[in-house]
Length: 182
Image (cartoon, rainbow, N blue to C red; front, side, top):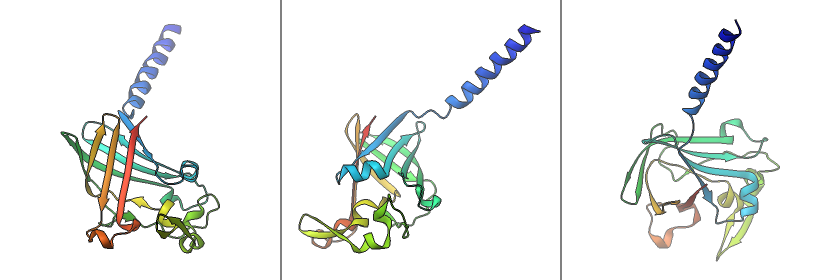
């Protein structure tokens, strides 16, 4: 009887262990922030996760419990192909249109203050022009059909610009994300 119980436990352990190992990520990259890293690191995380040899997920997490659950974790699942130094992605379930960024509605949050109505009216001075706090910290890149570039084996860059003349572009018209392998 003891052998049957032990065999049953061993089989369950192997079965459950194999089942959970199917969800292990191959590579995970985290965004390197160019803005105030103290604000970003305490309030959000942006990851590029490779699930297998053809599917990846761009996962943006706001680390704020007082915002709408719908926007707390935004995952964009993509099909991908690697050629030369490029990672070409195609969103499998595009639900945010073709805009550069996913529009996050006004949220009343203490920790993620940049999502509030007031933060959309407050400006920070970055370079020569004032920029709303929401534009600095609250925007989530919208992944559609995009090309990212491997700068090194451990670093991938997403750079995307709106179809405007360079002199007409501002911070709302450019995406720059640098993902580093952890």
